Image (cartoon, rainbow, N blue to C red; front, side):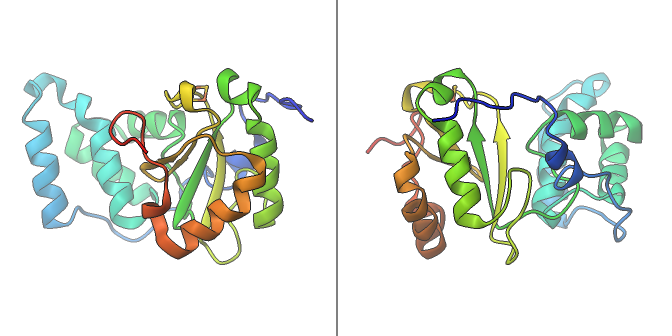
Amino acid sequence: MSFHPRMDYAPAKFHQSARALPEEGEPFAYTPENQAKFDACVKRYPPDQRKSAILYALYLAQGQQGSLTRAAMDHVATQIGCTAAEVEDVVSYYTMFFTKPVGKYVLYVCRTLSCALVGAERVTEELEAALGIQRGETDPDGTFTLVEVECLGACDRAPVVMVNDGWQERLSPDRVRQFLDDLRARGEASLSGCHLCKER
Ligand code: FES
């Protein structure tokens, strides 16, 4: 049994792959629907605190094209009224933002203490073996991206894997392959839910 053989807080593979320096990309602007969502969100803040909407602005941009190009980040900077460097600071800090295309399902395996104590590292190793990739990488057909993250706030259901915006709780290594098959077959409907809103 391994127990966090590497607790590097800036895994090289992660930064070399999904969190690489952004490419310029095609010219970017919000769709009318996303522009309306952004405008509704930013109204909640005083005009001099428009920057408070930056996470939502980035979330919309990433949702629109799958990852964040330089052009998308420049668009967010214009919308928010800040510099491109400030947007890049935020993007490089949060693990949920990607500067390179990711798979249809992003598997965020929690590696913090509660999950580590009940086998998160072995879950990650089994995911790597089943998918033929390492943490930070995307499988060849673009279905799964595997990343490690810190506490997801569901420690009582450890080990926890967030899948896009959904959750799989208490995932044991021996159930990893079935978990992947279920995701391929039924998508996020196969997930066990979230301890905050859905019990099974
Ligand atoms: S330690 Fe894994 S969810 Fe909190």
